[in-house]
Amino acid sequence: MRRILIANRGEIAARIIRTCRTLNIETVLAASVADLDSVPARMADRTVCIGPARPTESYLKVETIVHAARATRSDAIHPGYGFLSERAALARLCESSGVIFIGPTAAQIDAVGDKLRARAEAEAAQVPVVPGCAVAAPDEALAAARRIGVPLLVKAVGGGGGRGMKRVDALEQLPAILELAAAEAGAAFGDARVYLERYIASGRHVEVQVLGDGEGEVIHLGERDCSTQRRYQKLVEETPAPGLSPALRAALHAAAVRFARRLAYRGAGTVEFLVDREREQFYFLEMNARIQVEHPVTEAVTGVDLVAEQIAIAGGAGLRHAQDNIRAEGCAIECRINAEDPLDDFRPSPGVVTAVTWPVQEGIRVDTHIATGSRVPPYYDSLMAKIIAHAPDRSGAVSRLRQAIAATHISGVHSNLGFQSRVLADAEFAAGGFDTGFVARLLER
Amino acid sequence: MSLTAADVAEIMRLVEQSGFDELTLEMEGTKISLRRGVGTATPPAAVAAGSPAAAVTAPAKPVPVAAPAAATVDPGLQDLPSPLLGTFYRSPKPGAPPFVEVGTEVQEDTIIGIIEVMKLMNTVRAGVRGTVAEILVADGTLAEFGEILMRVRKSG
Image (tube, rainbow over all chains, first blue to last red; front, top):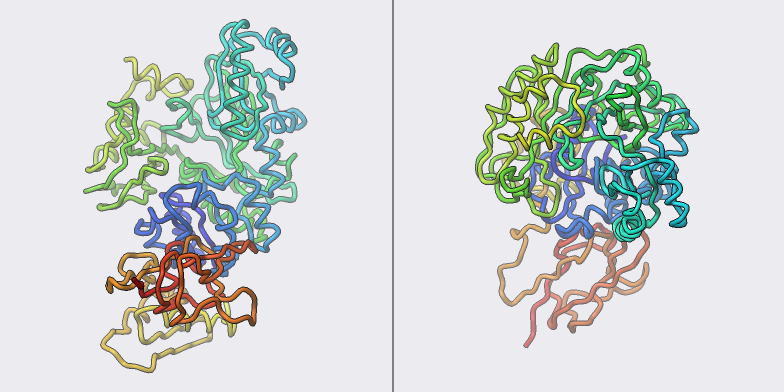
């Protein structure tokens, strides 16, 4: 592979370009008008303008992206995360146009994108799923809801990542919520199908990083705990997940590998689980068929460059690491730094970053596309940077991260730096192993 | 990594588009020196610097084509930007005469070219009345979104 087109923006575009440079692969950045003067645009060997700022007219245009790749004689497309990364249409058009898609096959994206199909695959791979089922007729739904018990969740088949979910606390609410959920799912995902799942009150979000060669060989690179979430938006992620018993940890890893093997998964992917704290039980949630935002914590402890592995697998090199050679050393924690105002209900705060200082410290990695003078456009997500701390143990990583955040200064836009300091200083955070209700509790303290 | 004739052509094209007059490229048993016909004061030093592999592309990033810097300053000239990214064709089919040439008079609805995106042909119209003064994007090459395809001297 000599040239890769990056169909993304922001910190992940910059991060992919960095790895391409070390691999002596040229980069073409497909950028919207709003990103032509961005840091990734300056880093890329070439930038092509694919359309106006609005994502539907630029980053989400499948044909334009593939045309840009072909016209710039790029061998492959790296989709990053978000945007088209999990659209089977892009993978499919790449497959039929002779462009390598750095990711899974279109069929695999379809299999995990349909949450009911993914549940069925999980069950077939003997991976536990949250008790639940598909719903067709309303009376059938009521019977199913009685079996599952309340509270329960109505989830969109085409949803995921916390989107397209509604909670039902009493059975009599079910018909109305079902109708609303189906209408919303149809509008948001183009798929009105919904299903029911038991609501697990005290769950931890633990996910397992996998790499597959597409031929049935799969390895895992340990787990990440992403329970520090606000309204399903992850804020802090860490590896290893604190306080898991060795048996539970091993069972999670094995389940993720079984699931990915069943699909003969190709590339980097993440299998998400809900870990029931009370029962020491875990359930399959979904698989993300792409690189994750929080992948650097895994890289920090394993020393494996996941983007380089994605490129190697896409190029036909297969898995370059055997499971036995993957060793996790120490603990890594990542903080997402967003342009948002925690004092105003975390409202996004686009604008121009008039001054910024990122931390330069031992054991600290900063993935960012923001420099002094950078713009945070209002059209895209508000992620400005990820600060990742790595240390021999968790308390060491927390302390490094706290120092790094204290050394970070951002002017011109609001940021959640102060809020993240509060999270890291919290006693419940220090103890670790909390459920996804942690941030809500913190906000009430 | 070895260089093909197409690679060399691509390198020449990149140098052509860049602000540099000279390029020396050395890699695994290959050495290429390119020099433009006209000598200017532009120092070529930056080209030779850096790792050889990184120099495969022109070292200076081309100025974004859609940047305002490329816009015309003559108030009588109207820029016709590309409405989307795609391959620009000046004629309806290979071998056919171009829709317009420099000097062609155009109306708002005159077709000036085609932008092809994955085999989908999109006609581009002048949107202005006047005479084609300049054609900036060559037939069969990539036009980025907002890249100026032509300039038209407005009439009336």
